[in-house]
Length: 272
Ligand SMILES: Nc1ncnc2c1ncn2[C@@H]1O[C@H](COP(=O)(O)OP(=O)(O)OP(=O)(O)O)[C@@H](O)[C@H]1O
Ligand SMILES: [Mg+2]
Image (cartoon, rainbow, N blue to C red):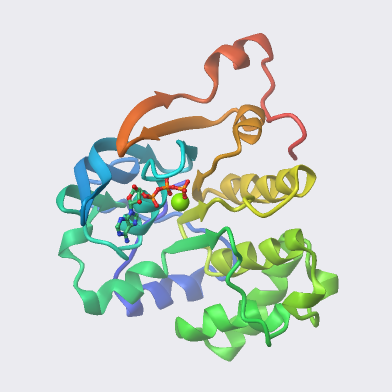
């Protein structure tokens, strides 16, 4: 499914009105091909530290990719560069064909509407209900009341939270809180969803649950990139793995191919 990242608010709203609930097919931006993410020789130097060192890789539309590597290897740096929270020291980053360097500060909020982000520590608003936490994400990006009424119940159903609408974050388990943050990240149906250690604070069973949810989101056509330390999870999911070490890409393994040949399942085990 082709999904385009748009920078003009008016054109985005028009497209959303035409297709209210689901990611929609759209023309590809010139030059992007199938690639949603392209890093070309990207380095990020912090004062005294290497965040990323000449990283070159690309991720195609609809892929589910794990970003792995030991602590300090550069995973969060990649995520933060992708939402333009950081600027690279050198190299080129393109998201859906748009060179991030060309996106002015003023347009960054519009760009970010197209990238959902999930963090390890959920980052929910503590004094708002589940419903309001998700609705707020739409409000701040200019969603109308009608849009909110249509979209929030839908996304809460998808994430299995329909019975928790009126709960506050402290009345939820860790897994449920992470579901809310996934719901919030996906309520706009962005073409790209980034998750930085989304299961870092969760037990193994709950982690599987969150991965199932990300997998379901990926099957709607959204490209999903997950940074994780959880090797067991990565092995189970059998998806492409990009490994970083000291800011360098040291492995790019397509979907655990060897294991797949032995067990030709179309779905990862334990996943719907
Ligand atoms: N704001 C910063 N200022 C200085 N150095 C930084 C900053 N952010 C990250 N670094 C350094 O850049 C390197 C990469 O950090 P990054 O946070 O990307 O790693 P990571 O792979 O996400 O690690 P973790 O698994 O612990 O989350 C580390 O050496 C880190 O200390
Ligand atoms: Mg990190």
